[in-house]
Amino acid sequence: MSDVTVNFVSADGEQTVIAKASEGDDLLTVAQIHDQPLEGTCEGQMACSTCHVIVDADDFEKLPEATEMEEDMLDLAAGARRTSRLACQITLTSELDGLTVHIPSESRNMQGV
Image (cartoon, rainbow, N blue to C red):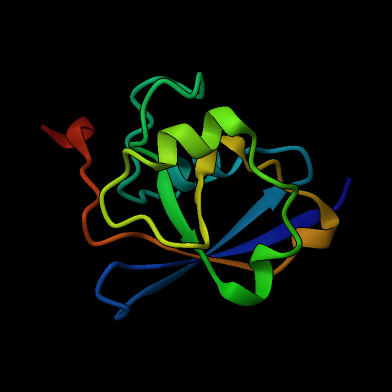
């Protein structure tokens, strides 16, 4: 397995965190390890949209198509866009090395409360 680099861009666009992960890791876990404000309340069961991220347009086409269930959850996400995905549903592969995701300004992190 090789390392995969992920770039997390803060909601205000001011800060980018460069994270190293391994192939097979899910994006939500990587985000949480690197202190990104993604809650993931349902722990990857697609019962919430608290891990909503906006994938950079150049990287969006590299992702497998979202399932209907994921699309339904994204309909509930505040600030969802065409390139929105749930981080819990993105499994990192070597093809995604350099992936850039933006944290939505509407994100809520209840873990720190």
